[in-house]
Amino acid sequence: MDNQTRIEIEAAAFRRLQKHLMEDRPEVQNIDTMNLAGFCRNCLSRWYQEAANARGIEMTKAEGREAFYGMPYDDWKEKFQTDASAEKQAAFDVAFRENVLGEKG
Image 1 (spheres, helix red, strand yellow):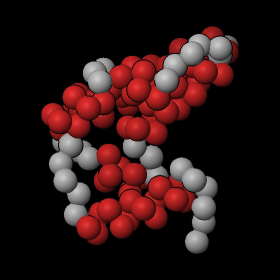
Image 2: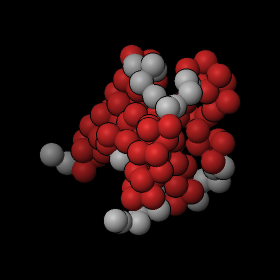
Image 3: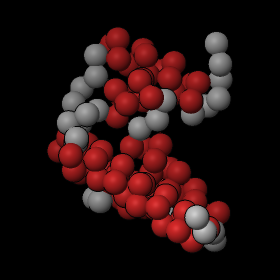
């Protein structure tokens, strides 16, 4: 497989993941995916922003989120986000430290 084809396939897989999370399963909460998989929609939007910035494209956190979510993040939260239980929040605190901050144990 040539490099351009690989890039196009990777981009298509990313778009399919984005569609799955945004359109097919918007009821799945970010806290649940973070607790189970170590990443969530916000991570994906941050990675999108970081990739843009690495290529010299100025993009803020809010702009990265809007590009990934397809709407301002506050609108997404209002439409789809629910309150998390204390148990989920405690698990998230651990997952965030391990997966975002790189702290282990």
